[in-house]
Length: 336
Ligand code: SF4
Image 1 (cartoon, rainbow, N blue to C red):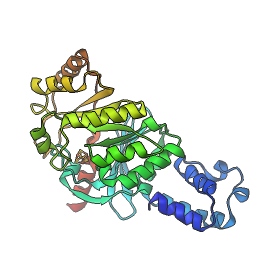
Image 2: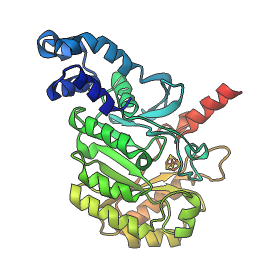
Image 3: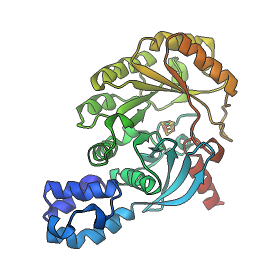
Image 4: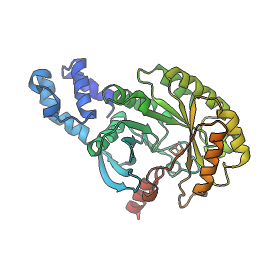
């Protein structure tokens, strides 16, 4: 269900805009209806009150936790079932964050990503995206939502932007704590600046070399690294928060001096943070994780040369962390 469809149903029942907002706010903030509404009997029109139990049940049915996989770093990976039997991964992150999926599968086909191997299966609706946050909030506080799970948010823009709007307005999440992550798509640079909620932006670089980028991200739009950074810089200046550039560190692939020199040339002086994430080795995919000492030395060198670099580990390393592995294993188990 899309959030817009839900809004229209409430309107058809006679709800005014403030009633619609109130019902959605109670859902996304995980308010108990009896406690959350001052006096439901006084507040909502009778047809809405009568329909509420049914509407609540429909919202509850959008997504449910099939299994939980806690990790030592405080994160937990959730395998989430959708109403039609499809599954996505949602990750509870340390420090009150949650990482949500925006598609089942993904069409970009990144060579190092498990989700990319399946192709696109279907879009995740705005209701299902917000439902992942609601599930997370039933387990722990959520103050940050990153769109870095399964899928390319730019390929499901209407649903993702609808979810971002609700989370940023009624969901009480600071706009800079909503992080839209993309390989780069012209539509993103047109539509994000136009929204009333402007999320932070994370751009996947992974390499400065066009030919390597074409191989690693075969169906990403053909932006050069410099063009991406130019677009990113414009958006950072507009919003007032820095762009996050993502670099999955692949041993022997994108960790050479030529790449790192080009990266310094590209990002020094920019309003940006470089997130360097050592690859999470994946059986069946032909890439290796570099040693932690090597990754740390690379990050330190970039930092010294003027690039604000953060070395991060992908949350949930010890529980099949890494986009799509949990789902792939669950699908595999179901099909054996
Ligand atoms: Fe899609 Fe992201 Fe995986 Fe690339 S890394 S295939 S964009 S889900």
